[in-house]
Image (cartoon, rainbow, N blue to C red; front, side):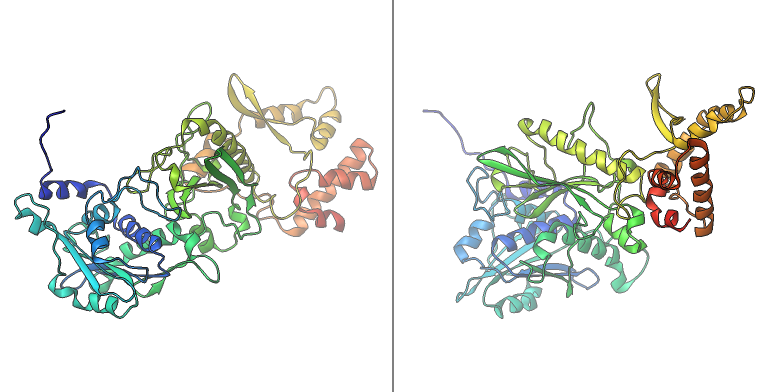
Length: 495
């Protein structure tokens, strides 16, 4: 028999250490709402008051509630082993979220809960009280003196749970020099954005699974995939993994800026972190968003980074909660890493979505207006010279071919000018304007009047008929296969 001695951690020391998990106010509140969803709540009311004499944050739901015995167990740290199988709809795992999320923001955590037909049960952790408790785990059985109005709201409900944070020593208001209620403006904005993203699948539809209110304002869902937009390009859903762990994966190529006319709508679709940061994988467990964007360390031949040209690529991954360990889901539910046996397949799927997203980005203006044209003729082509990308005029382009073939043998001025153009393409300038300054080059024919576009089409049509001996119908058909006239077929009909 092994000899041993009991070595429990001092309550005050461990509780203070658990404050360093790295939650923000919005991620901590989302973790509390997970418990409400698991308790089958239909409504959750979040109240944030930082300007009052006694600041507080409260989260009240109308879920099933807990008995006194269940509440006592729930308030223990590590209340349930993460190795125990969870119910399919359970959003928890470690038995730590309620405590670590709360301690990360406040020194006092009160939980009051009521079962249908039962009385309100109350338990409270107070870190200042623990500091004077000689290392003992003293769980208080009463609410703080100023909690009366919050408890009364719960008592009026048939059932539900109240989580109350006091002594908010780590809530960062994130405000300007403004005074009064405006102090928490930025915090409230970030909180609403985060909750609308994390729980968007619960908030969607005419009869949503959950109604979420922050300071009486109802939170509306934010769909990362713009799936209802007509120019969104979804891929077929694919199932990967083993029979016991089926993972659903679906890619989306979002519309480019010229497909979203409203500037505000474009900015909202980019998410709170912006378009570049929001690209990549979106990992869900039981419809709850865990990871928003990023490429999960995947890539070929090296891990991908978030860049401008792939900002329209987003990929949805749905996990069952039995896969937490395989995907290395952390306590905060904010990080994940795909298992080795899925990395190659996920990389292949992402390659396809990234490739399509890059095409939409590079050739914006050609998607959603007219059907794609096969074998589209472009005057420029990309080539590799000495292992680097370069850009050359495509001499087999119908117009370029006509110009070069019509030159006198002694007059090589046009050919020389073509060479000059090819070797002075301002690649660096285009890249800086696009990536560093966030600008997008003007779409084809930007700033041109309809009459100017018609005149150019008329000249090119004449060149095709004269230089290549095409009939008028043949020349019109070929002009429709030239960029960017493939998007202006109606103008060709007007000539």
